[in-house]
Length: 199
Length: 79
Image (cartoon, rainbow over the protein chains, first blue to last red):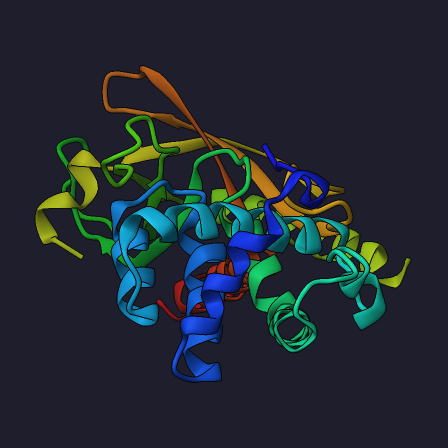
């Protein structure tokens, strides 16, 4: 859920001015956007360390910053004015402009991150394959049939917030005919993809 | 790949269904336009019991998968 920037406590963002360098502010923004949704304790300590601030005052800032950044990424703003208009008129101008620049610079990276963590079916994360020749089996004493083994690693959706989701393996053996049929299907997907890309 | 996982423990691919989708928007991005491929594989084990596995691939993953399946077919031709 995004708490829209309209309800954000902008004054708490001024804690960012305690950063000793612009790079520290960039790091804080990045940490807040990327780690913000996973409710990790690591985020609070990382930000406190970057700014040299105490946890109590930092918590509020993180909440507000997260709300602002999420609003910006949600709308996909491309113009600085669109982002600047989110801030109150009396907000510290340099800080406002710095946050605006950081958001614009990181827009694509953060959007990609958002896509990788969005609602999804279990994801294929890796696969291996091998081509074998079947020389014999319990039913045939001599043979020479090519066959392939495909192992796919699928990562399930997280069920427990604190643990990494499990991977499970799918091992399949494919005959030449099965593989050819699969390739047919894959080429249909490729065709559809090019027509989607053209639109 | 672990040799003990070959042949006797790999199931036979019985069916492959697919869907090409485009994620339009999400709670985090109002405008996404992000394509993805979803697949359901039906695998029969040695006893004939069929299990289904459904998963998503990003487009780069799909392209990599597709290329490697073509490689695999080419290798099979050489045997």
